[in-house]
Length: 354
Length: 278
Ligand SMILES: Nc1ncnc2c1ncn2[C@@H]1O[C@H](COP(=O)(O)OP(=O)(O)OP(=O)(O)O)[C@@H](O)[C@H]1O
Ligand SMILES: [Mg+2]
Image (tube, rainbow over all chains, first blue to last red; front, top):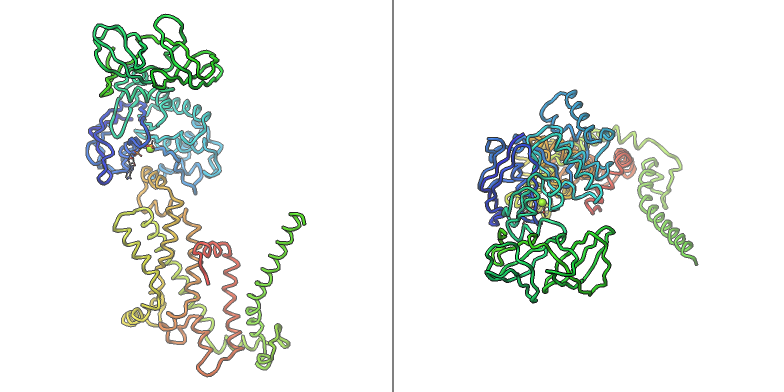
């Protein structure tokens, strides 16, 4: 087990710089999720930690050791790939024992470790099968087993669940989390699914275009995103954004169609802003400080109602924790708690503390 | 006519067509084998008889006693075997490297490999002959092998298979697991290439087994002939001893047919992979 520290990491492929100075620290035993849109450089960071790519500049520490020039096999890490990368010609047991065999462990020792790991993961009945004789979920478990068996200092996961169906994914999420609690090994987990990140990680690193946007605990990202990008990325369904203006001394934020929302608390806001409304913070409301929006689409899941509505020429999503049957095109009044409204600088996108 | 009846009729016609073609292909072979058992008189009968009236083993006896036929077969076999081993080894290694380590220099080398495929062997056969002669390798298996150690098609075939069926992650997983590059090649890559390598082996073996032009100029001593050269030797400038030639050819076919029966699947794969065979 070890901390992983990444300092000013740059990575270029040819002339293209993909990572523009990434820094963050992963505490010993923490489960860190790297999230961000496709192509932002998540896998690249993982591959740099693993030593599968050359570092262009910057440093990576595992424990106290700088590992820039250490061979992958000497970094004491284990990686689980999206496509599992099981050796097709080896049985489950051989796949799992592969790294131990390379470490020249005795056969008895390998058997014991493989058996033990297989029991943890519930694949001990499959030890003599070949990978092609396994289901997707079983392959996933074997791939994890192969990583666990050698007791590495750091686990690296690259979207390990993205090839599974939705139900299995939820189940594996819980199993992975339980496994981490049991082994307490430092884990870096790449995903583009923010729900996975929010539910599994102790710390989430949000990335965009080769930069770190924010590092924080899941709820911290939800409650206090540093900017509009993080606010829009974290939370599902996603936050809606509207332009609004206000003046010093006024208690109102004016939307582009003239409707007004109460100003969140007392900050001296003056000028043009972007406000963010979380779908789950909006409620149906008749009187008081309400705003009107036109329903464009509605989805009923039984317990909840998801509405797509038009407000001040922008589309916003509204999530009601109740049944609400409405024809498309109807106009309804909604309310939102002013303290739940987030305010962003309309030019830089930075969130303004309210 | 119902669709089913029509399908049955189509199938029947296909069967008949294929059967006829099959007979046409087999007749010369059957005739050849039959000729091996004929007396010289029956050889000249017109129309030729498909089954000898008075079968004799005289021709075979003569072939095996008067010419070193077995020696020739052995020469061919040794040559084909060594060539196969060399081609499989070089193709596996080179195909893997050009498939998985695509640096610019390696790509250029690969293009050079491919370029050699479009230069007919006959073009550089003579210069190669002089080099082999200068090395004192005439009449030796070593000299024969010089032109048959590497097969650019083999490298191409393995490269395509490496790219299609060995994902990078597999090699990366092995590197993280602590395997060295040679270890990865031997224990991960080679087992996964077993199918294409077997197909290539069959192809390489028969390429060498049926080679003619190169052996005939490199092997000048009767004892060191390969079988193809030996067979051609029956046909001197003035006469052709047909019955002896037939017997020798029939005897030579035995190992080929045997190999085909045993390796039929690899053989078909090899030909399908190359997409060519006369
Ligand atoms: N070997 C490479 N050569 C050139 N460019 C590369 C290479 N590997 C990755 N890239 C580029 O680097 C960028 C980041 O890629 P990376 O795979 O890290 O993205 P990602 O965040 O993992 O995306 P995804 O969620 O789709 O997996 C992409 O623009 C990609 O095109
Ligand atoms: Mg990726």
